[in-house]
Amino acid sequence: MKVLITGATGLIGKKITQKLVSRGDEVIVLTRSVMQAKKIIPNAVAYLDWKTGLIQENISGVDAVINLAGENVMGRRWNDEHKKSVLESRVNSTRSLVEFISRLDKKPKVFISASAIGIYGNDNAEADENFLAADDFLAYVVKSWEAESLKVDEMDIRRVNVRVGIVLDKKEGALAKMVKPFKYFVGGSIGTGKQWFSWIHIEDIVGIFLFALDNNNVSGVVNAAAPNPVTMKDFASTLGKIMNRPSFFSVPGFALKLILGEGAESVLGGIKIDSTKIVNLGYKFLYSEINMALKQITKY
Image (tube, rainbow, N blue to C red; front, side, top):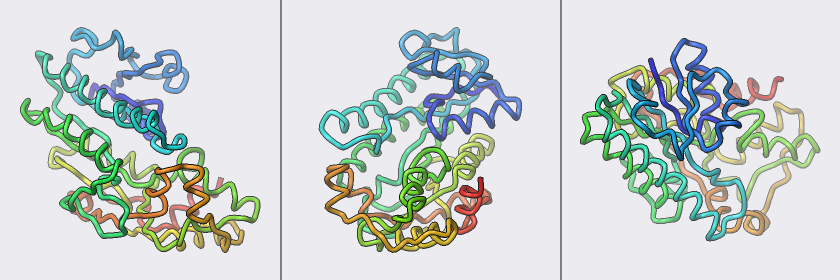
């Protein structure tokens, strides 16, 4: 299979690309930094620059598109500039990609785009794919992002929007940051600790993207979070036990707001994700319990 992928140098993109290459797929990387992409992902069949790569000859015969492009939401304190970058990096890249696909003589069979559970807000409700979108900034970003991908429906292309939960990985992402205070015996919960923490192991988020790629029965919006979410307090307690460290310290909400600004609300609140749909479609989670996931990630 020939697969075009954007966002290939990010946390999820790197892992997906490695899996695709290892199983024999031809991967074309569409990136804003060809030099960086070649260092991180050395085995792609082609590297295309966003500015010059979107021409028909470069991606002719592509069977699938996986769209992961987007600025890191929690990469820095939220201000107007960062929020604009978070929104435009997702919406504009998806729009450009879809517009180009519409001009291809031979169109891909499937378009899989990353999305986020941030669409549901952070009021600790339980949310399946039909849950109403919230009215905060992240929900607006996700709605706008997904709206651009809907246009492929008119081209008879199978579309999948993967609403990604909190990805757990040893080296990058939320867990990598949370582990540090535990190492120095000052780990613990964030805020009240009562908020839901809808997590997913890095191997499972990669697995869901590949499952969506390979199975024609997967379409539309799918939640991608482990079937057993936990509260932030339970997450911290489990991590502390596995690392043999205390977990009774906590980061107060006001302190997090000083660091992240408005972005702190998405951490201090949470949502309990219902992943029944992807399970019923046939995906089998490798890590469905937080204890098992954290043991695997922290053992190295």
